[in-house]
Image 1 (cartoon, rainbow, N blue to C red):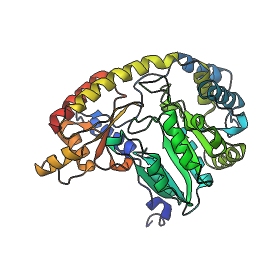
Image 2: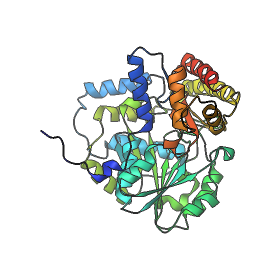
Image 3: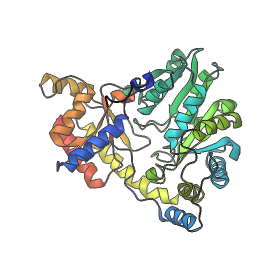
Length: 401
């Protein structure tokens, strides 16, 4: 047998997820017996709260192990509506909600439903690594709008306006941001909304998955709350993975207009169908169970954040702006990269070589900035055990000083 037929062109337009690739490589090196600290993965190092596990066990005992409606159980969609009203003052009905296998699938559903070949997707960057590839896979054209470290990784309305056009179909906004930790205020979101309002064909994807992991405020404001006049052009994306330490449960959701929700459900019906019935019961318990279980995680993240900021601030050639949300430090290392290259420590003056150097030299797995549309930077996650974070910081400091 001579092998498979040629692959579809769309496969050539995308790359494997950079964050998953880093974590996979780190796991392979650890399996070989090498001393590796993986700070590439965005996964809380906490167990799922017990009341959520108990709800899943009760669902299994009650025989809730069959197919559910494609957009999710009515009970979970009602819980999502209660959450959005209680925490965000947003009014949605169960018909507006589609429960998916993680927020990643919810975003992919959206892009497949609204982006045709040649449509432009404006991506506020630094951005999550999957946005550009999802766009390319669906035939769209990614238009990154890059915020600099000097601007604390927040774009201005003028930058957004310059990037938008009659071809703009979708605007991707993630606040709190992966990778930068930047959080847009209500006023800043309203200012961006004024720009978007001038382009009637543009829909906003408000990715709020890190909503509750903030440090200077209780939670981040969602674009939808700051721009009620754009309600029919805003899709809220969220889930339970980050806030409730439920990454493996794979539950995310979208909230939109009934027409768009129906279209996204149609796409999902031909791909994964419904999300796991047991995980849906667990997610319902998470959303209805209050936010007290989040507090210990936020306190641990806040303590690590302080140590990360202090350590990175002491490294020459590394600039780490304020980390207002999420659990990542995203640092501009352009000056350090130039120094390493000049000293023949790395083969090329780029962020990929920097991360390779950190992995090979001191055994720390970090993610380069280029896949986040921000060359010259690198991301580390502090959603790892305290001793791992502290040891990794010592190693990074040693390697870059």
